Amino acid sequence: MNASTITLPPILELTIDLSDEQFFELCQKNRDYRFERTASGDLLIMPPTGSETGRRNVKVTTQLEIWNRKYNLGVVFDSSTGFKLPNGADRSPDASWIKKERWDTLTSEEKETFAPICPDFVVELRSKNDSLKELQQKMQEYMDNGARLGWLLDRKNQRVGIYRQGKDVEIIQSPATLSGEDVLPGFVLDLTDIL
Image (cartoon, rainbow, N blue to C red; front, side, top):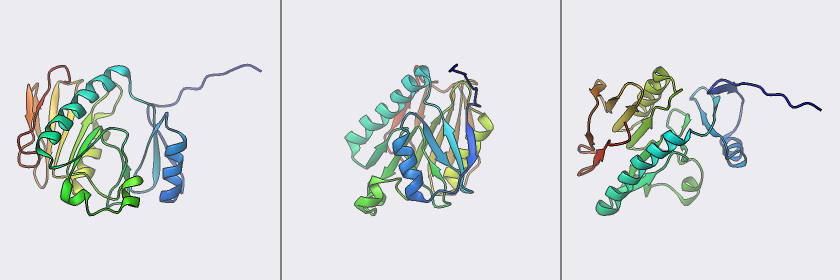
């Protein structure tokens, strides 16, 4: 038998009718891939990030966790965490945070699966092959589902899109830092070696 290689697009999109429980089980049994599901039920299969993106992403999550330990205002999540958004989509931001009071309203069972909640704060770090348009749509989806602040870190173009509830997206070219504003009081992300 000869081995053959197939090449798939960076993100494979399939339409499969899965219950929430079946989708969670699929994700658990295939941990080498990242799965998301759109509000219309399309299944997105993404390979793990490249090493360079993973290295930069951990810098974002680490800074967020250090701030959170100091202020203890909420809960921090990494890129492997899935959330069931109010519109029915299952999404996994690269880094996220939920205010403690909101997180504490969830049951233990809800916290063990893809929690049915939209994070208050989300970060997406654009990888080399990520579609900017698709990431912008994803960021808007977070805002439409209740996120209060979001950052789209676009390494390729050396800029950041700042998403705020009810406001137009602000684009900043090559910032050195970003402020958590009133959503993450006192948090400043140092973008050295991230952007």
